[in-house]
Length: 548
Image (cartoon, rainbow, N blue to C red):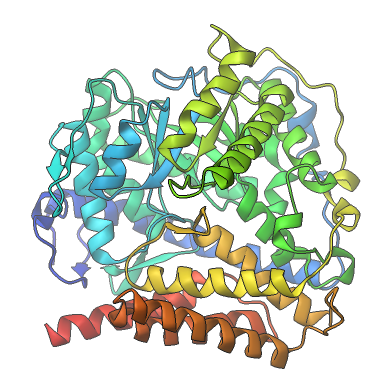
């Protein structure tokens, strides 16, 4: 389509299949706004992605990570602070995360959490239907039109009090190929941000809050600067005061951990703090450092938040945030309660409580959960530490964390086991089957798996094969060994799908096997599993449209 908006006269083309009610989201002014932002910042985004690749190559070539000399003045300057907490973001003791489909949205909004993180990223599959209906659902939430009745007759209705809504757009690395601007795919980050901001910023302001965001996958402060400039331009284009937007950055890459103060500085007029994105952080360590045998990690379950390098990262995050007046938000509790096994529930809830107690004691101002049934546990823990106070921004941890502490991966205890390999394979396959079918958050073995946890699983397989790790049972982890495990686990999943009348997912299982082997057994590390998976998702979408 050609839009006549005076701010943008290029060609905007929608290549996705037609979605019911899409005209409410994909209006000419909204698309022109998307195109305006994307066009102004596309070149910088591409350059920053090139910078990422160059940094990774330097690390592969033997360079190490350290705090930047060029920004030492920012870290040394004690005078600057981020913006004060915005309305609705003063008390963040319990935050619940999840996708933007109607059922999950209502459940999250009625959970009693302080904040709902509405996720277009790791907990979402980027089908065009999911992208468009997710935006529609957010409008319906703010207009209180999201009530519905399921096919089974169960009613979902919003309660009176809603948590603060914070939207997580997709990362800078991801394209949105359903939206083309002057013949090139748009940035998925810009599409998610701009559509929500265009339609909902004033709605949020009218509620006494504002348009708030979580920013994923940042690798350095220059990427934070890009977001800040996008924010400033978006507010200018819509006549909204600069600083109305607030953003919390997920520190979920090892490179960003060395630039936390600089990230806060770049976003200081829009900053709402930092979050300990633990699962992507674990993945990032392997992605950036995993070619070095010093950084080989044991089974996923052995890498807890108390191992030295993870502990150092969270301690530095709290110290950095409170030094600059910013909220420090803890990591995800991914347990999914079961109504079938009380003993499993009791053990898991005890582990969740211990995790949140550690975070609260360390100075975090709140934390994440993935399931409504965990809200009470998290709230009880933070109530016990915070009391009537909304946060503990005045608390400054005394522990000093250096570069060596962040890189102490070799001090992680644990072993590689056949069970750990099978878990990584089975979780990856089951998740990919669901992701290719349009579901981005999947409960597997009482854990909420998303793209981040699957990235851990496949990257560990790659690392163990690359370094010829031998399992505790005495088996070398070779490509043939992994392929055999993949075949065996796929056979079990195939049987389960047939038994559960999931025959339509069998083709997706074959796709999942191919994607896992491609990303776990390639000579070069595949940057993000979701990139080749997205290519396959688009092929499936086109096939469905052709058949329909």
